[in-house]
Image 1 (tube, rainbow, N blue to C red):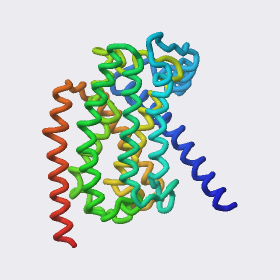
Image 2 (cartoon, rainbow, N blue to C red):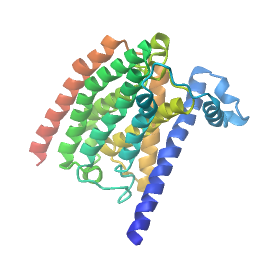
Image 3 (cartoon, rainbow, N blue to C red):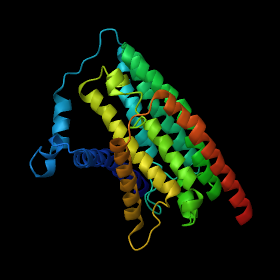
Length: 317
């Protein structure tokens, strides 16, 4: 009975994190962008500092009509938002936020995370193909090309820190982490974070969406709650990427004075703020620039990081 209660409690906590943190990040994005770009709208809803903006967005999505194009593949069209969203819930299950505070501690946790995160992009590809819209298909093709390009540097950067720690367990990586890993693994951290942003299709890597060119890419034909699920998957992806970067490269729960869980969340929110800041500050990359950054920039840097890790491991070991 105690084991069942423990499992249920862990699941409830993970579900709350899955539902609440993306909303907090979304609300933060409204406010940060409002300040950085002098956007007045998000600062008025509900009165003080626009506290009700997120509620207004939710009501708006709930009221919109659920439309499916006549020529669409209905079944694929309907399940695509779920395919985009659910993998991030599965990833949250294995991310440790403190010593022993993890849903399931897998020995191959890093391998599991990288495998499952790649599934989420399939939701956009399915949505683009099933919508029977040329802009959606183009967005889906761009998403597929982006996934293939940035998956390699993402995996190589993650392999570097796994090699340094000598384990694929996320908890084991945090326990093996030392403060002097910050400069040693800095290249891998940058590569991992940028490649993760590209897989999330966040600005400046948002060519699969590119509102000024192809409307909303794979999401062009989606309305109401299905569109809201795609938006939720984007913000859950930000939370997952920020948690993973904090756990792999910033020491997770390691930090002075404050409890370990607090340090994990502080690092996560700092990285989420960086994601928002990059959206506000940098223009969208052209498709050729985006591909060049992956193959000419990030892949060689990830290989350099692997070489450095191998040399340091030999010298230290």
